[in-house]
Image (cartoon, rainbow, N blue to C red; front, side, top):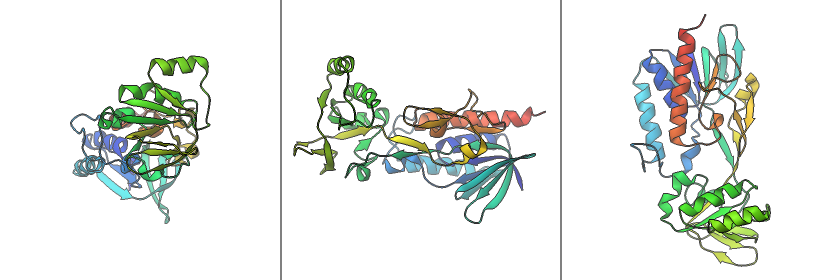
Length: 297
């Protein structure tokens, strides 16, 4: 069977794209590996009508609503390859390389977070160690907040976070702020700790320094390096831009990539991610893919 659109990725942006297409009565296939970026977080925040709802519940409800449309099919598995054909695109799925074809392709690939190699950090990711102040800052209740430098760009985090609590910026031998940056941090009330972080320990995100000091924190923010969760966009020949933390798929305002017939949405195709942005991106990608089918020559 050939589909109108194949969507690779069934998290928030892929689901939103699928909903637009399903409501246009287009036959679509969603291929999902089940690796939502926010699967480590207990709740999602900042998304209208769903503030504080468990992230998995939002995704499950969205999938249930999408699957109520009889033109939608879902495959749980990895898309292992995608190639352009004269009729559109051919996608291979899973180890058995099941082949499916579609006229258009939407890449909702998601990203992977590459966390700093600090003992105790990974197991606290999404619980007391975070990357997005807008998603998790409020719940820290103006408490003790740390920012762990992962690159010079971490100063952006450090300058933001005093709006959510008393902030300490742990340089951790990553870089040294220049005089102008030091003045910016001073004006924001940020405390600078130029020691080396040994590990995270105990409740919350308590930091143990190499010199033996223990710094209790209610939450720690890091800016991890990110990578796109699948090589398919690169294999198709899509162009990329370098974002603040890693590459993103280049798209225009309608979420079209540099490859004709391929659209991209969600964290893999923008320089800042949240459920709200992902859903908006997906809705645009789904609408644009539909319009490209309607007005095809």
